[in-house]
Image 1 (cartoon, rainbow over the protein chains, first blue to last red):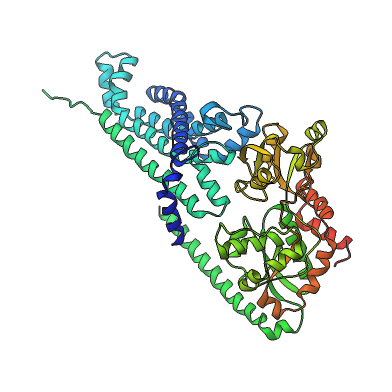
Image 2 (image 1 turned 60 degrees about the horizontal axis):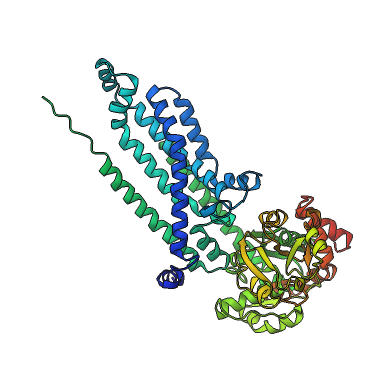
Length: 232
Length: 316
């Protein structure tokens, strides 16, 4: 019980939130890491997965890339990257020490949900709808842009949403290579046996994860207004 | 789903069975441990706990073999941090290979809060004397100390040491350095705090890369940081082209190796010091450093290194 008291005191002390290395500062750093890594994963993963889904082929590839991505522990990957000559531990601007290595590890971690969802979403657009589009004389590009993508969008976006929350929570590992983010609060707390501080860091990460999830869900709902098809 | 459930059921049944089996074993064991059995001399079950970094694992292996040799049935548990075993010591754990400053300051922080002023005596016996009340209150007795001591130490590359003529920490006075150290280093008197206040070193940045960790070595070797934290008994430095700087202003509290024993267990087993004292006499800082090197650099097993040492010293 004393632990929760310590946690509460840490969180409610204003001094812990502000200034250099304060919770808000670290939160900003971690958000930047998360958003950048997610953007990298989107740029790499989305086009490939959507294209494969459109072809209805290469599922083997998409599923296996995702499978491998899920099976490799992010931390192991990060450890490998920082010991390699490139990218190593060099400081990358606002991404801090070993910034590039952390971004790569997180982006790869974000790929599986993005690829799987996008591929499956496009592929599983009902066959009769696709055939109807062909029957109307649409080209491949038109079919993709006007039929498959709108129908697949909710599932594609839910993959992105999943990746966002996963990457956010996992970005705490940056602290293990002395990088930026809220992970620092957690590792410091445990290293100094100030468990209240460690738990406080975890609570902030969890709360922000929920907020991100809700915000993303709201955005998805706004953007996916499936047009009603008026029957004549 | 069904398959999974069956598996889970089988698994939990298995765990239950094992648990019951252990329970029965413990009952028998506590019979063995009754005072009448203990006072008749050596033997009986003894539980050892320690941390799992190489040196602790090595010294624990020495305890284990010596105790086995003396007719005890030791069981060993190695954990990540001191916190993890101190919750069950004394009690379920009977003996811990400890460091004087480590255990006294742990008890001090526990009894007087995290901000309690730590004991800083540089002499092991003196420090144990200062911490006697804390130890008594906790039901812990320290046996004879070894001359071997493992304190924090700070290293630089050999090249830097030779080029700039830096052999002592006070040679770094006024210089700007990046320090790679354990995450709890910031502000501590035996770490960043002492380096700044006592030595006047300008620590511009503290990288929390770990105590004697590969990341810390790499950071110093690569020139990202100039100073790294390790222990005085680190056997890996020489082979990596690193060298420890002398702590000439004595910011490190004494960390002599010492067996910490549950006072109750000791009362029932008065022969325990006879088993462990010779080991404490045989160990020196130099020997320990060399043995650590065998574990960390040559990748020998702690138990093998321990056995070889005990045989060479004629302790078996």
